[in-house]
Structure formats: structure tokens, C-alpha cells
Length: 298
Length: 288
Image (tube, rainbow over all chains, first blue to last red; front, side, top):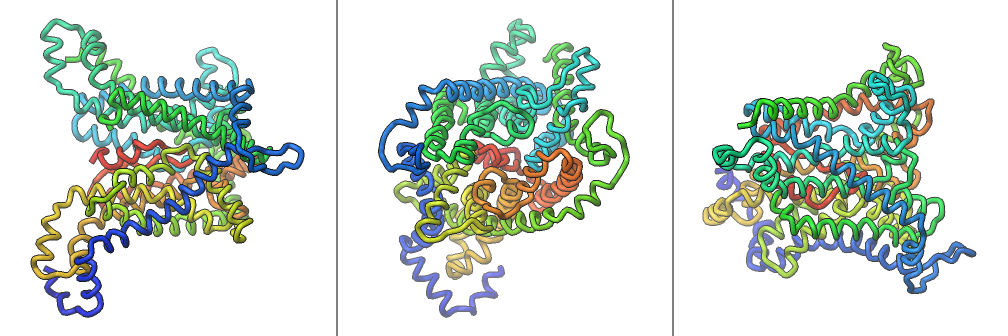
């Protein structure tokens, strides 16, 4: 062993090691201190500051933040039909992307988990994760090219007799989101399908169930936690993204609204309050998903 | 088991999904050689003038340098802090132990824009309080904050799989704490550190949302892309850069495959969207 060669080196290092060995509390403090201090100083402080700011208000005349406590920002969000529309549009988009991605994920996950040979299986898994390594912005950009006026998608749709441009539309945003998060949907569904015992499927068909019935009453209930887990990714990732709508769409989503409230309106208190909306939505979603067993499926 | 129809549907769906995943990348590659500035189909092939134009772009090289600085800095900090936290959580029992991983995953779990405006308003506050200014250091601090968790996850997963009897044997044979760390612990977590470091580097290199809010006037590659994509005349140049970056992204995949002996790593989701907490769990238990 290499250890024996190094025993000669004693002195200070050894004394420190021994001292630390005798005082586990000191060792723990030394290990835990730096990361804990970093997270508290850099992140949790910033986050609490943001939370506090959401209860302050902007003086419209002076554009200064007044440190007066109140729920005015939340009242603005609740009462303003603009913010409600934006929230509903974002949640609707997230739901649409989730459903589409699950539908796209299921066949390839099923094929990889239950029909493919081991070689093809690992090739498929690599093929699914490979696009994740290329830059996020580049993948959004590729959809800007595809959906551009007179571009590839328009000629493709023309083959089916649909002559319209999807450039800068919610359709383009939907397609791009589906594309971006698809790998995150495939992996949990694959994991769930791989764990599905084949004997249950055989038992189902022995008992006379046809393919569709087996699928509906055996496969879907058993992989449901996996589907719920996949939906967490697609839903929450869509909820927080503002780059994609900026680059391929023109509609406003929660992220865009927050971005503009900070940048153009410099109304940080209202932005901070609006930022709590996706956080609350995700908290509710995660609680529901936990009930459905999504976390065991990860 | 599956009927012939079901098998056909599943195979068809698999092909559709694969085409959906790769067609955009192929189209992106084709348009990099497009003669025209417009994106009309089909592209007028072939020209390499946009690669030359990208090479001459005055902002591109500073942006690349900025990205590398930020990614290297953030990765180094994340490696140190992430491993410290992993060792603490794995080796000790203490009050609040379960909340550590929760706190670490928070910057990734919350939508990116929340983390971004939190950090930017904290920097603004720091500016008025003690003259803190936006620079590459504020980018590094922001990136490191959400990179810690990927290193933490990789290291703690490895520690859980490594039997503690090795450490005990080393101590029994007379090695002190430092020697045990140097000759027993470190070799056993080395590939986890490499994988975590690669993921952290990739995460930082790609990040746009937090960067947008913490960079000030400092350029990084994603910021360069984001600024230029929206100028129609610059789009072909961005396209050329995009193709080069896409080809370069094969390097970390290859490295990860080689260094971890074919262990497949799921890259962390791109920060741009603020990835959800369970991704971290996925990295631990994901396909191996």
C-alpha cells in the first residue's frame, strides 16, 4: 500500500490530523462551515432580502423603494387582469408542454426499456441525453431558425396544405419548450418502465386482457409515479423560463413580466412579489406529486 | 406480449421522437453554411464566410474568455464547497442535517429568474453599502452558488457506495487522517469529482439567466449569443458559432465517458430555466 511509504512524513500535518481526530466537532465545523457560510451569506440572505422587498412598495413619483410594510404588491397582482392573464397563460403553456412531452416520451421510453436489446438500449439512452450537453441557447436558437418566416417548418407544413408562418407565435414557444425538456421527460418514464415486472403483463394477458386493457389497467397505474416525476421537470422548467418566449415568441409569460418589471419599470417590489407566484405554484404541484408517489420514482 | 399493432405504434413513436430530437440540430448545422442572411428554405449551400465573420467579431473572443473565467472560478469554488458539504453530511450526524441538501438544491430548484433577481438586488444593496460592483467575480459567485449542488450530489453518491471499512482499515494500519484522505478517500472519489466538476463547468458555461443579472457589462458567450440572436444581420454569425459550440460539446461527453469508465452522467438541466429539485436526485440514481 502507498500508505506505508508516506508514514515517515510526520510533524505538523500529523499533529493537526490527530487533533482533528480527537475533536470531531472541530472537524465538522471545518467541513460544514465554508459551504454553510457561503449559502447563508450569498444565497439565503439575497433570497430573504427579495422576500422582504416584495412587501415593500415603489413610490411612483420618485421611483424610490419605500420601506413600508404592506400587501399592496400582492393586491396589484391579484386585482390586475394583466397579471392574471399572464399567470394563466404560463400555467396553460406548462400544462400543454407537459402533456405533449409525456406523449412523446412514452413510446421511446417503452421501446428502450422493454423491447430493445441491451446495445440498442444504451445507444438510445445516450441519444436522448446527448442534446442536453449542447448549449441551451443554441437549442432555442435552432427553433428560431426552424420557425422563421418562409423557413423549414413553414415548407414542411406546406406539404400538408397548411400555409401559415409560426414565427414569433405561442405555437413556436410550445414547440421549443417541448423540444428543450423532452429528455427530462424520457428518463423518469424509462426508469419507471424498466422496473415494471414483465410477469404482471403476462398475468394480465393470461387472464384474457387485450393489449389496450393491459396498458390501461396494468401499465399506466404502475408507471404513473414515473409520469408524475417527469411532469415535475417539464412543468417547472416551463414555468420559470423567459429566454424562450423572448427569442421565438412574442407573448408575455411570468418570466418576461418579472424581467420587464425589474429592467424597464425598475419596480423591484412588484417583481419580487410576482416571483413568488411560480414558487407557490411549484410548491402546490410538488405537494400533489408527492402524494402521487412521484419522488419514489426518481 | 404486445400486439403487432402496439409494437408498430411504439416503434413509430420512437422514430418520431428521435427525429424531433435531432432534426433541429441538423437544420442548425445546414444553415451555418447558408449563403443568404434570410432563413428561407432550402438554404443556399455552401459557404464558410460566416465562420470567418465570427472569427473577426470583436466581442466574441472577450466573451469566450469571460465564459471560461467564470466557469473555471465557479467550478473550483463548487468543488471545494460541494465536497466539504458532502463529507460533513456523510460522516457526521448533526442537527439540521437533512436540510443541508435542501438548501443546496434551492438555487437550482427555484426558477432561474428568482435566483437572478435575488442576487442582483443583493449586489445593488452591496454597492450602496460597501461599494460592490458588477464584474466577473459577481458572475463567479452567482454561478458557484448553483454549481455546489452538482458536486455535492456526485460526491455524496460516491461516498455512500464506498465502504467505510476502507477508511477504518487505513487508520488501523497506522495512517493518520491526512494520509487516509490522500491515499484512500481521494482516489475513491476522484472520478466523482471529475464528473461533478465537468457538470458544474458545463452548467456555468451555458448559464444565461443569472449571468444576465450579475454580469454588469462583462461579456460571456451566452450573453453574446443572446444579444446577437436578436439582430437579424448577425444571425448567420451566431449560427456559425452555434455549430462550433455544438461540436465542442462532444468533448465533455467523451471525457465523462472515458474518465468514469462508461458511467453515464445525466447533465444537469440548463440553468436558463431554473431546474427543479428532483434533477439532483436523478443524478444520484440516474442510469449508471
